[in-house]
Amino acid sequence: MYENEIYSGDHKTDQNGASPYFDYTARPVEEMNRDNSSEEKKGKKNKEPGKKPGAFKKVMLSICMGLCFGLFAGVGFYGVQLATGQLVRANGSTDVITEVPENATTYPVDEIHGETATKYITYVQDDVSDMVEEVMPAMVSIVSNYVTTGMNFWGQTYSQQATGSGSGIIVGETDDELLIVTNNHVVEDSTGLQVTFIDETTAEAVVKGTDADMDLAVIAVPIASLSEDTQNAITIAKLGDSDKLKLGEPVVAIGNALGYGQSVTNGIVSALNREMIAEDGSTGTYIQTNAAINHGNSGGALLNINGEVIGINAARIDGSSVEGMGYAIPISSASPIIAELMERQTRTDKVAEEEMGYMGIYMQAVTDEYASLFDMPKGVFVKEVTEGSAAEAAGILKGDIIVKFDGQRITSATELQQTLQYYKAGETTTVTVKRSVNGEYEAIDLEITLGTRPESK
Image 1 (cartoon, rainbow, N blue to C red):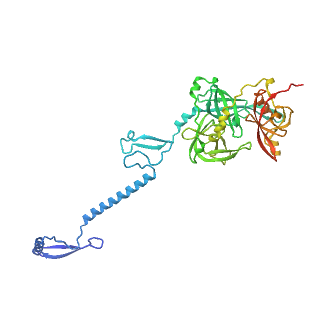
Image 2: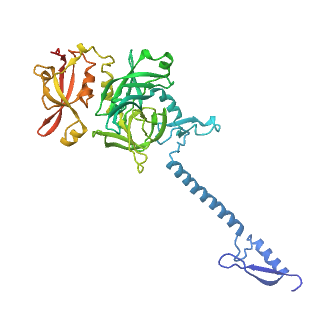
């Protein structure tokens, strides 16, 4: 190395901008100074060939990458908010773009996290306890007493008292009666009914009217038999519109499951307009739900999330391989029938024997065996019509099968005789018969004015 000399390294880079080596050239200091002075005079800077501003480039590259990241992050956030329905307008409006569900609850944000641009938040409420608490006073448990018969080991027929459990819904009130809807099969063949209310008090009830085809019944409890506290504790249920139901809509079932008292289950609408065949062979159209419906729930309420009755629990499918299939009568189909049953006269007292109405027929019950063997409807077969009787005047013919009396289903001669005990001679009502026409049975409604029972000779 020469004295007064320095090494000037021409900074060489490879194709990636790296500097793997330097090229050192010996130049005297005086020569370098002259070159610098000359360049300065010309007002030019000495630009060394091949040298690049690495630090500045890195800074600019970082800024560009940051801007790109922010742009893509903003687009992604916008997309997520739009997909979840949480986007609010930029002007600070609190209107949510998507429709708010009926079971949503809205709270001011500033009460939770302080003041923000969005004033309110909305969430779907899964807790139905408040709704259940509101509707429970309209629900009742029903115990039905009836007589069952059987045959012992020695072939002797015996009878004994038995009880069954069901549920009901308070649907109306008059000056004299509290009216409750339930299933017909809950009260059918009952010899006595006891109703338990929300305050655990009980009262006797009587059947006001039934419709076996729809499996509906209205029972009545005398207002006079209820304490003031009970009258204040109970409420009348709100009836909804089952025609507006959608698949997947949440529902709640309330009823006296297994006779243990009121219980609550929830689920969704699994199917609509589902046809099912009942035990008596009749076909009905039901709402199917996966809300648990067990024995004792019959007659109870299927409710929407707003606490409106949209169905009357009617049945479930039993079997170890079946789960989550319960059925309810749509309230929109049931409401007209319920309204008609509520208007019927409640018959609680039997009339005196000499005042009892008389039809004037000889009859025989169509049992299950006969119905199956001869393809006949179950009811009371008219073997003969007495000349000049009320039945003849009404148009009842030999061979007709009486299936209803005053709207109530009749399945045996004994049942018809028991029903007549509540009707006086001179009363007019409707008898429904099934008549064979061209080999098929048709239902015919006949108006009959009951006559007086002839004196025994």
